[in-house]
Length: 231
Image (cartoon, rainbow, N blue to C red; front, side, top):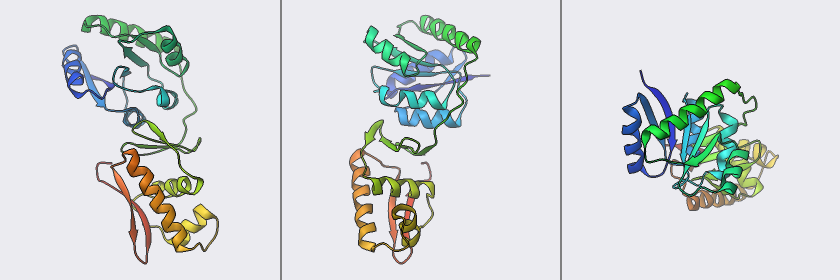
């Protein structure tokens, strides 16, 4: 029986090599290519630990978010070790920040030692912020923050409110009246005002690299946040 762990690494070729090494020792690796995808996976699946390759992933902007949604050890490997980077990582929720060895045996020994210590601490994380996710898009509603490809997107208030409302009702067509009440707080808002907000939001998402869904207009009915089947 295999035990799963999650590796966050944008280098697929390197990940394949790591996967083979760990599989020979009874460990099954799953790959997330960015922190946003990693956060989605840890909220849905059980892992023994999460490993992050610091050489390929800018993990710091979303490390504390990942920490808040999982209690499994978060282990960060780097070839650019510094005390300052280690302190920042540990303060934001990492359990280990260390140089990654070429020897799989050394890596496994280090990982298992930290997993054991984490289990002995019995650490639990009671507070889990509400997240809305779709592919590489992540919305932290509690903090009104939006990330795409692990980078924060700056949205105006109405753009943010519209995105949250549409994502919370994905694949459902929402009428102009429903959108006006929820986002603007009025029963009637000029259709042009809604359309302009939609267009600005579409542009910001597109420029940020969002690719798993789109905001679609159904004439006479309203707008829908339509997602791909694998989103």
